[in-house]
Structure formats: structure tokens, C-alpha cells
Amino acid sequence: MQKRVYIETYGCQMNEHDSERILHLLERVHYLETENPKEADLILINTCSVREKPEHKVYSALGRFKRMKEERGTIIGVAGCVAQQEGDRLLDRIPYLDIVIGTHAIPKLPQLVEKIEVTGERVCETGFDQNGGYLKAVLPQKPLAKVKSYVTIMQGCDHFCSYCIVPYVRGSEKSRPSSEIIEEVKHLAGMGVREICLLGQNVNGYGRGSEKELSFPELLQRINEIDGIERIRFTTSHPKDLSEELIHSFSRLKKLCEHIHLPFQSGSDRILKAMHRGYTKESYLEKIKRLKEACPSIALTADAIVGFPGEEEEDFNETLDLMKRVQFDDLFSFKYSPRRGTSAAQFPDKVEEKVKQDRLLILQELQKRITLQKNQALEGRVEEVLVEGRSKQNAQEVTGRTRSNKIVNFEGDIRLIGKLVPIRIVKGYAHSLRGEIVSVTIRDGGNPSP
Image 1 (cartoon, helix red, strand yellow):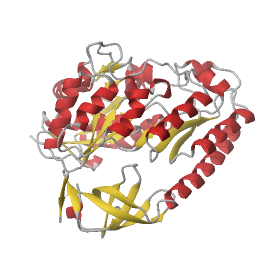
Image 2 (cartoon, helix red, strand yellow; image 1 turned 120 degrees about the vertical axis):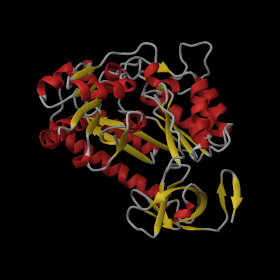
Image 3 (spheres, rainbow, N blue to C red; image 1 turned 180 degrees about the vertical axis):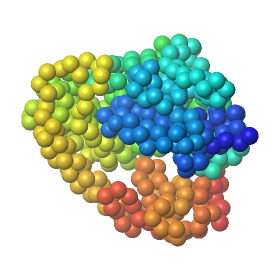
């Protein structure tokens, strides 16, 4: 009998990809996705605990779904980082919750759901899999209705930054065998995917600790040789592990897009030391310099935290100075929020909430001006855009991204989806670009077509 599953996903791209894996797994036990939770037989909340807000949203969502449990007997579950962190406490706190499944237990989900259907027993699976079986891909068996896809290459982190919950909820660094990754990318290319984004909490730590495994730059080289794949991206990188070999990959590999996400978190050496980041402001700036030398057109994005314990006005000004010197294309910025179990949660000298909010607004306003200036500087230039789908704002338009990961909207037919189209940028906005087709000659899988 066909059943329906509704998944609500919070947090990062890793979680989005995990939700895709969950859907492929549940197809094996006759569940199809629905966008309407009211018609679902199974509701899953895939969670993130890196920031405070996504964690709060979990409990809010569970409250919304309580009626569906009462009226339809819907199975309700929590997966991901909050599930890993809270475990049985979630079952104790939410009596109508049926399943808690941690970050390493996703492959067990179909069997656990079937067990609940038969016995009604509530289950919690949050053990770590030391053999790495949880990273094995779940390959789609029919062409995908999308032109880009994520591929997990590693999970976990060994850096233990003082504010970060990732090592505790995702475990230590574990890399997938490169042979599996390459076969997955080839499979996705055969399913119509044109852009691959390689995922990991610290992708440039890929292969570390295994003499027989490829390094991350070597893996990029191998993927660059796969027919059908037109673009390669990756996220996220730790500045401490950004090697010269990886920097030079941006000048050597034709398919590697000119964009890197390189979180700096703070511009203050004192705060960076307290965060246990393993680099200084100047060493970070030196890496940025090397990236720009290797690839002058590279787009730079990053993460930043304001209001870390002990942050003074001088420390915050160092962060603003770093932003002005780098001129990031975009920035993801957050107020510090303590995560239970991290060392920073015990630090004294907490920054007042109002001070954190004021600093965040100053930082975001600076970045908004920089992003707008950089987008406006593209006006008149021709950029190659991979068309991803119909624009959400205008049914007569399609949308895609440049190689530097900037969103472009322009008038076009949906038959352009999956094509690489030359677009002249006519207007730069704060969050996107507007363009127009330069010619009817487009590229499809590397071949020009009218």
C-alpha cells in the first residue's frame, strides 16, 4: 500500500542532502513524498543544532503536528543533530513522538519505521557507526528533475572549535572511499545532473589519515574528468586545512567553479584563539591573497559570529576591518549562541544581547553595501549561467547561477533548464542579478546547440 511522508528540513546543505537520502530510502518501504503534512502517514523533522534558532523551530513544529497524531495516527519522528544531541530526552519531553534517529542511523530508518507500524513501539537510535556505513549513498534509479545535486564525501570534524557542536553530533572525521564517490557522481551524471556540490563539515580534510586514499585536490581532479558533469562546487572548508594544492585547483580544473566558502568567524586574533580556530587574521588574509592570485575572478563567501564571550568593541572592529579588506561577495552572519556540551558554553564574560544585536546589524549593513557594489560591478558583463528552473517571482522567467554562484533571473523558456546559457547582466541587486540572453547558442553537456 502506498503511503506518504512529509519532511521538514532545518539547517545546512548537509541536512538537505540527508533529507534526499531519507526519501530515497523510504521509497523502498512504499513511502512517497508529500508537501502537505495533513495527508502524511509519516512526518519527519530533520534538524540542526549548530544555531539556536533551528533548534527552537523543532519544538514549535512538533507542537503543530500533535493534532495530526491525534486525528490520523501519523507517525512522527525527529532526525539529525537535535535528535543526536537529545536522544531519549526528546521521547521523554514529547509523549506523542515515535522515533528519534541520529546522524549515523539514517540507513536504519526504513526498518525502524516498519517496526513502529507493526508494534507501535517508540524507538531511539543515536549510536555512532565507526565503520562509516552511514555515509553510503542511496542512488536514485530514475532521471532526476533537477540539474544539480549534492554528494557527501566526508562527515564529522576533528577540530573541536570551542563554540561548535558538530564533533559531538556528527562524530569524528570520516571520509568515504573515493571509488564510491566517483561512481556516485557518474551515476548522477547519467541521471541528468550537470552540477555537483561535494559536502562535508570539513571537505578539505578529505582523505586525512588514509595513506591509500586520494587527497581532496586529487578527488576534484578525478571528478573533473567525468563526462556529463559541467560544474563542481564544494562546501565547507576550514581555513586551517586550505592547502596550496587545493588553491591551485581553482586555476587548473576547468569544471571547478570560481567560488569558495571559507568561514573566518572573527577578525580578532584574541577571539580566534578562544574559538580554537587554529589560524590568525593575517594567516587567513594570506590564504585569501593566494586564492585571488591563483584565480583572480574567484568569489568569496564566509561565516562570521558576533558577540562571542569576551568580545570587546576592538575585537568587533577587527572583524569589520577584515571584511573591508577581503570584500566578500556574501556573508552568513550570526549572533553567538551557546550550545550545550561545547567548551565556550562555560566561558565567562558573556556579551549582552543588545550589544550582540547592534553589532550584527552593523556587520550586516556593511556586507549589504559590499555585496550590492560587487553585483552592480557585473552590469554589462556576459556570464555563463546554468539554468536551474522557473523563477519563483515570475512565471515568464527562469533562474540559474553563474560560476561564481550568483543568482540570475531572466526571460526564457523552461526548455533552457539544464542548459549553460550566455547571459548579459543588465542589473545588479542586493541578492541577485537580472540578465538577458546574449545569443540562442547554448551549451548542453559540453556541446553547443541552437
